[in-house]
Image 1 (cartoon, rainbow, N blue to C red):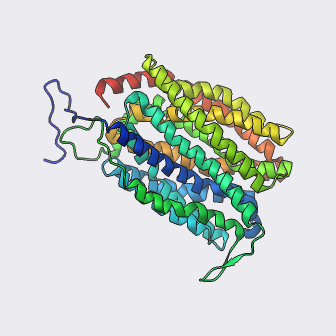
Image 2 (tube, rainbow, N blue to C red; image 1 turned 60 degrees about the vertical axis):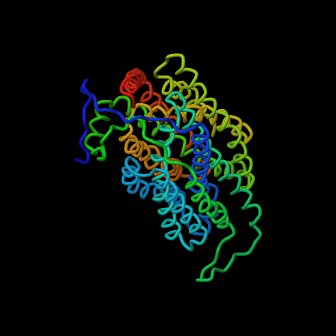
Image 3 (cartoon, rainbow, N blue to C red; image 1 turned 45 degrees about the vertical axis):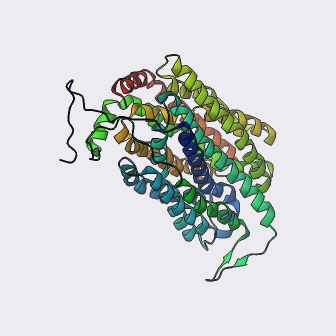
Length: 454
C-alpha cells in the first residue's frame, strides 16, 4: 500500500541508498541557482532606490512608501509560501524554481508600466507571490547536493546571489536613473505613459524570463535520508511536533535570523534615502557607489563564513554554524547603531562596509544550520516557516518601523538617521539573546541528525 514503510530488524525504517550528485552537476546547479537568488533580490529591492520619484509621481508619504516596499511584497509571499514549500517537499524542486522566476519576472516588468500607486502595489503582490517558492526548494536542493560540512558553503554561495542582486539593484537603478532622467515620458499603447524611472523595472525583470529556461538545464538531485516505500507527504502536525521538540533550536535559528533581517532590511531599504536627504547625494550617485561596495564586500564575507564553518566543523565543533552567527552579531549590532549617526557620507559608507561584512559572514552558516538538522521530507516546510519569518515579517515590518519612527515619533523626514539608529538599538540585543540561547541545543540536534542519517 502506498505510504507503507517496512522496518529493519533494529526497528529503524530503511533509508534509500543515496548518492551525491557529481561535483560538476552540484556546482553547475549552485551557479544557476545563485543567479536565481540574484534575480529575486534585484527585482525585489530595486524599488528602494526609486522611493523619492515614486513618492513624487504617486503623491504618497514615507509610511505609504514603506507599505509598497514591505507589506505589498510580503503578504502574498506569506499566503503562497507554505503551499509551494509543501510541494517542494514531495515534487520536482527544479521545475518549481523555474516556474517561480518566470512569474515574478513578469510581475517586475509590470511595475514598469504601473500608472498608479494601486497598480504598483498589485505588481508588487505578483513579485511576492512568485518569489515565495524559490527559497525552500533551492535550499533543499543545496542540502542534497553537498556533504553536510559543505552545506553552509552552498547556502553561503547562494547568498552571494542575494548580495550581488542587492548591489545590482542599486547600481543598475542608479545607472538607469542617470541615463533616463532627462528623457521624456513614453506613451503606452493601451493608454497612460511610462515614467523615466520605470525603465529600471523592465530592464531588471526581462532577463529573468530567459534564466527560467536555464534553470531547466539543471538536474533534480535525490533526497538524502528518504525512507524506502514512503510516498506520503509528512503531515503538518508531524512537522509542528518535531519543531516543538526542538523549540529552542528553531527559536534561535528562525527567530534570531528573523530579528537580524528585521533590523537589516529597514536599514538597507532606507539607507539610499538617508544619503539623499542627509548629504544631498543624487539617487544615481548613491546607487552606483553603494551598489559597487555591496557587490565587493558581501561576497567576500559570505565565502569567508562558509569556509570558517567547514573548517570548524571538520575539527569537531557541532555548533559551528550557529556560533559564527552569534559572534558576528556581537560585533555587528554596535556598528549598525552608530552608522547612520556619522557626520559625513564617507564615514557612513566606511561603517556600512564593516557592518555589511559582519552581517554577511553569518548568512550561509545561519541558513545551513537549519538545513542540516531538519529531516529531508520536512526541510522545505520548515524552510517556508523560516522564510515567512525572515522575509514576510521582516520585509513587511522592517521598512515600516523606520518609517513610523520618522513620521510619527520624530516627525521630520530629516530625522531618518535617528529612526535607523533606534531600530538597531531596540532589535539588536534581542537578536543576540535569541541566538545565544540556542547554541547548546543546536549542537545536540546536529549530532542527532548525523546519527540518524538526515
